[in-house]
Image 1: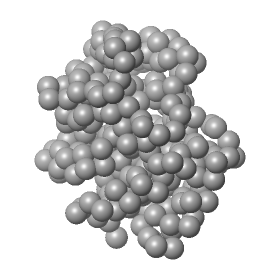
Image 2: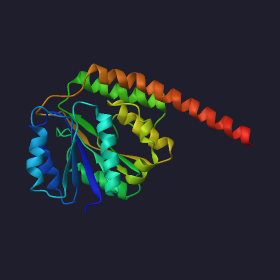
Image 3: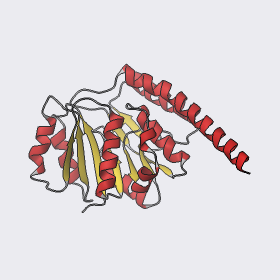
Length: 250
């Protein structure tokens, strides 16, 4: 039984799914994989089912009826992984924008004391490849915006290549995670930091997908912009209410 599982949400990833699974299983560290497929019409789930015979007990699949959002996929995966007893729970994209070899470095960071290790494009040593300038500008600008609003000392708060220790996911109230797009990544880091967990950034090279179609949309960007303000506002009033309740008790 591995102590680590890599959660990979998918929608129409038939060009990448076999290769990303093979790349993770080729690593020297023993990782298990959980694919969460949102009813891909291109047959992604069927490919995973065919590979399960080769990787019995190590390759898992959860199927959903349609596109229900990145955040809900990960939360389903978190709960499943906790029930199964995994100690280190990873998030990773299927399209090779995240290098599977960096799973080892994230795992090592968690072993050395990080409660949440983030594969970071914008910390020292991190970088982005194959992205047009305008997309880099928007992405980096978004990270600055999030840091300004939330005061989080995380240089890549929208990053989706991370590992959580199980204790973090057991402590966060997952029912209160409200976002389904990329704002989900911000809220999870914000929640972990608010609870006192240690976040460490590990520099990575992020590469744009070579095959398949990007899932980014204006709705996802809009959710992140509005959601960060709402999240910070709610946090402010939660803190105020706690202080007020403490004062009444004393």
